[in-house]
Length: 324
Image (tube, rainbow, N blue to C red; front, side):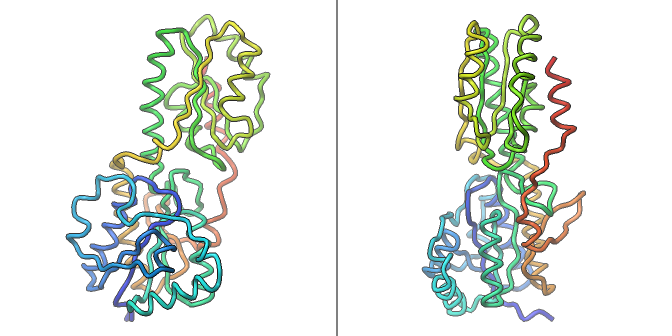
């Protein structure tokens, strides 16, 4: 039988839509199983500073539909030091906390792994990042909302592009991963998608634009921000080759992080939040709860944080086929 009686939940790293739904699930699943639940404000920084508050069912009421995170999030330089982690451990002992649920990405799980190694604290992670770049889950919490935000924005931009016969270069988030770019590119009918995982073939892009210029009144090129070229540089290169094009750049930026989570993200966060609590009670630690082929599965932090660095080439092929 588990000795865990008190757990705490925190959100760390970049915020992602669905984090609140995950917090809600952890709190209510903990209460359902007879646990006392605490919330840690501002991620690991709050753990170091002892910014920890008790949570009950009412404290997470009416948050499932809200973007961002009610617990806030922050970077913590102190937690990167042994002294900072020791202070964090002393704080959780002071509050009687037996285990943690951490919601975030690779940086969050890297910190959790170090904390377990030094102080043997049971920790389960939830994949909260819009980039969808963690191994061990088909989708991360926030990804579906982010790509739907991009699709909505690009659809509106295309209305203007068609009205003025313009070419828009649209930069989306994804410094290390082009998954947002590639899926939103397919779903918006982009003529080309530039991602950090693949070398940019400008000759092929220019040839495609030249072939389709008589058939289309608008053109959309999606660029992941992680690409070395960036949206502004890509636009300049297109202008050099096609000076007759009216080229505009739109950088979507942080709007991709905000907004109400989609149904998919709410359900995903809810399922994984419950799984995290029940995983801790079953004696699990140092693992991320994810969803693979519809089933909840647990992946060690060390494997989860190995970024998915290979893009599905069938997706890039689809972009090329459908851009005619």
